Image (cartoon, rainbow, N blue to C red; front, side):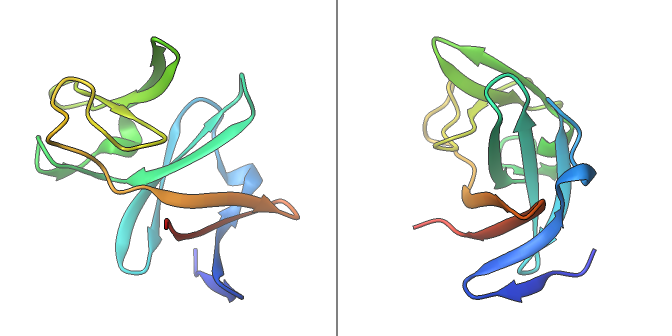
Length: 115
């Protein structure tokens, strides 16, 4: 889907394009981004789709869960858990995923670079 510039936010897809409790891969500024919609707490998360340990664009295919109150995605390659808020790998803090600001605006999913 083509991204549209909306002030500093970029429209990536429609809310209906997201699958609850699963990842969706989108392209944003020439990067692959994994967007996750947690149905339980109605939260959106956006992280880089590139697994820094497995060296592949696979994070959007990972499984969501929580450990000690932290919402994570488990990499489908080597099963490391990445915090969906900070991007930090829970087993190897020296590895992390880039995070993005994400929001819903009139049923449109929008991203921007995180501060």
